[in-house]
Length: 111
Length: 114
Image (cartoon, rainbow over all chains, first blue to last red; front, side, top):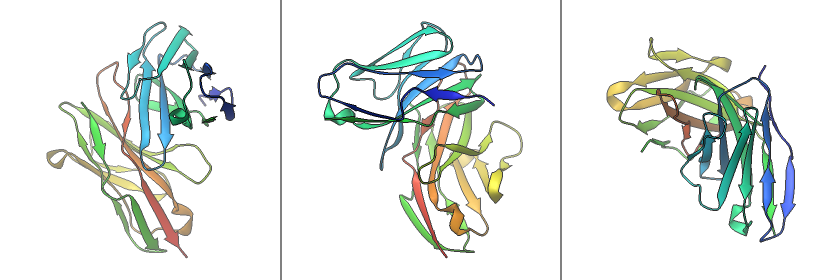
C-alpha cells in the first residue's frame, strides 16, 4: 500500500514563526497535495504539485508556500505563522489522479 | 472554477433507516467523482469513486452512489445505516485532465442512534 507520512502529528508554534510541514510518499507518485481541514469548511486545497519543482496554487494559497525538490517529498511552509492558520493539515499523493492516499494529518496550533 | 455542494450539514438517523446524502458539483468538463468517509479521530477513507461506465457505483460497507450527469449530482446512498456509520462524509470532484486537483465539499456529519 502507498504510504503518505506527515512528519508531525501535533505542532504548537508561536505567531510569526516560520513553520515547515513535511510530507513524504513512498510510491513514486507524480502528484502531491496540501489541504487544510476546518470544521464546517471541509478540506480546502492550499497547493499542489504534479512534478518535481512544479507547483500550482489551490483555493487558499495566501500565507503559504511549498517546496518540491524531490519526487517523494512535498513541504508546506508557513512563512510567518498566524493564529488563523491553526488547523489540521492533510497531505495527499496520487497516481494519475485516480487513487488518492492521505496522510494522517498534522494538527497545527499557532499561539 | 470547480465547486462541490453538499446539501446537508448534519443528518441524524436511527439505526436501520435509509440514507441519502446529496452532492452537486459545478464543473465545465468531464469529471471524476469520489465519496470519502472520516470516522471520529481517523483519517480519510475512500468509500467509492466514479470515472466512467455504469453510473451506479458500489463501494465499501454497503454504500452506493449514482452519477446523474444532467443534474450534476453524485448522491450517496445506503439502504440501512448502522451505528458504526456515524462519521463525516465528503464528496469530491476532479477534472479528468492531468494537472487538476481533488476539490471537496464542506462535508456532512452523520449521526446514527442505536
